[in-house]
Amino acid sequence: MSPPKTFARLHQHDLEHLVMTIEKALEVQTRSQFFLWAQGALQGFLAHEALWCAHGDIEAMRMRVECFSRAVPSARLESKVTDPSDGLLSRLVDDWLRGGRVPRVYSKEGSDQTGRRQLIADLQRAGFEHVMVHGVKEIQGEHGSFFVFAGMNHLPDAHDAYVLQLLLPHLHLALHRMLPHAEGRNSTEVAPTVLLSKREIQVLHWVRNGKTNQEIGQILGISSPTVKNHLQKIMRKLNVSNRAQAVGKSATLRLVAHTDPV
Image 1: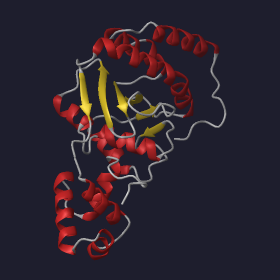
Image 2 (image 1 turned 180 degrees about the vertical axis):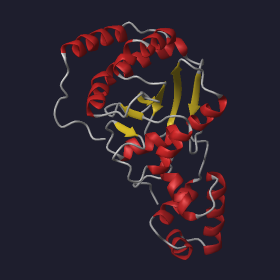
Image 3 (image 1 turned 60 degrees about the vertical axis):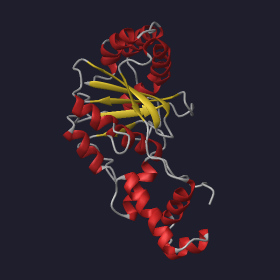
């Protein structure tokens, strides 16, 4: 979903609620205060079952995630969301980055499903019919943040996206004020453990650019069998079975950039 082209109309009671929500956000210092704010004032604007808050280097997919929910998520759900290779959170971040870093909506009722049907289906299998996400695009590096409102009680619309944009700075600041008081507790690390060598990254770069093993060997000054060996190691590390899957997963995990040296 793209940001609304015009300001959404907020009624007087919405404005009063917005001021109150922001005021409560300014009081957040601890994890328990963040929980009470998320399950209280914030619910009045963006009703949800669970709020997943990622912090760290969002673009590099190196982050930790906090979950705020009335019901403690099961270990299975936690794994589905936070798996560093192909968990829901990493895929949502990737889609948000590719989609222009604007509020994004995921629902089978939504109109914008192109290229995202599998992700929407996987979110539904995890129990989340309507999901909205957004992150702080102005802050990059280790101080970034990304928020997933999972299990919303209706299909989010332009009004919800506008409210999320208004509240995003306060979500970000409240989260980062809370972190020094919650470090090491109730958080899960989401960071790719895949370590590709410089040569493997070079090979993957040229695979992504459509080169054959022979062509890659000529470019890098190595033999075709050596290229094949590198590819087999890459596929084992990424837990994939072919070249196309390796390219796709490396893109999701941000392992190879367009400007990688070759």
